[in-house]
Amino acid sequence: MNLYADVVRYPDLFMNIFRRELHGKYRGSILGLFWTLINPLALMAVYTFVFSILLEAFDVEHYPLFILSGLVTWFFFQSAVQMACSSLFGQPSLVKQVRFPRHLLPLAVVATNVVTLGAMLAVVVAVNLIFIPETRSTFWAAFPLLVPLVALASGLAVVFSYVAVVYRDVEHLLLTIFLPWFFLTPVFYNFDRVPGLNDRPGLTSILYWGNFVSPFVRSIRDPLFYGRWPRFVDVIYMILVGAAALAVGVLVARRMDDQVATHL
Image (cartoon, rainbow, N blue to C red; front, side, top):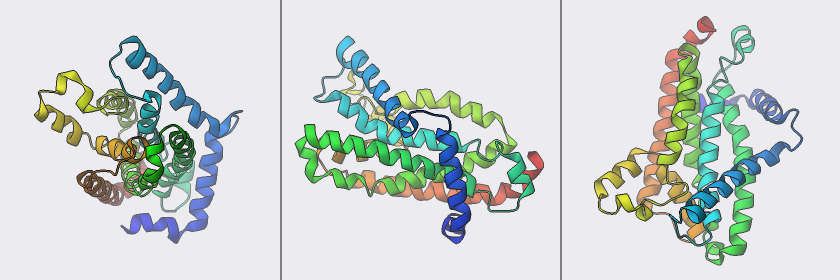
C-alpha cells in the first residue's frame, strides 16, 4: 500500500494538486460549493414527488430525509470515481513532461470530493437531528464508516484513471452504467419495501451483496436516519471491499504506470 502513502510522503505536491483540483471544480461558478447541496436537493424533490406523492409507492416518514441520507453516500462515490476517470488523460502535458507519482492526480480528485461530502453530511446531520430525535445518539457512528467509503472510491479512482488512459471507452462506459447502477442501489427505497422482492430472498441477496455500494448506503443511513447502529456484517463487508479496492488500485497502477506516457 506504499502507493497511497505517497499522499503523506509528498504532502506539498499533493496539496498543490488538491488545491488546483478544488479551485478548478468551482472556477467561474457563482454558487460554488452550494452546487453540492443543490443537486441532491433537486433529486430529493423529484423522487419524493414521483415515488411518495405521485405513485404513493413508499410510505416512509420523513421520506425526503430518507433520500438525502442515501444520496450522501451515492453522490460522493459516483462523483469521485467519475471525475477521477479523466484525471490522467485529461492532463497530458503534465503527465508526460513531469516525473511524479501520477496516482496523486486521481487521489486528489477523491480528496476534493471529500470536501463536498463533508458539506453534504453537515447539512444532512443538522436537519436529521432536528426532525428525527432518535438520531441524536447514533449519528456520530456514520463518521467512521466514511473511511472504508473513501478507501473504496480511492481504489476505484486509481483503477479507472489508469485504465482510461489506454482504453478511452472506459469513461463512456462509466457514464452509461452509473444511471442503472443508481437505480439498483437502495438510495430512494429499501429492499424490504419493494413488493416484487418480498417473496424472493435469493434475488434480494444478490441485489444487495452483489452491488457493493448497497451495504455502504444502508450502513451510513442507519445511524443518520433510523437512529440505529449499523449491522456488524455490513461493516465487515465495507472494510473488506474498501481494502480490496485499494489493493486492486495498487496492482493496476504498478502494472500500467509505464504505459501512461506512451498512450497520451
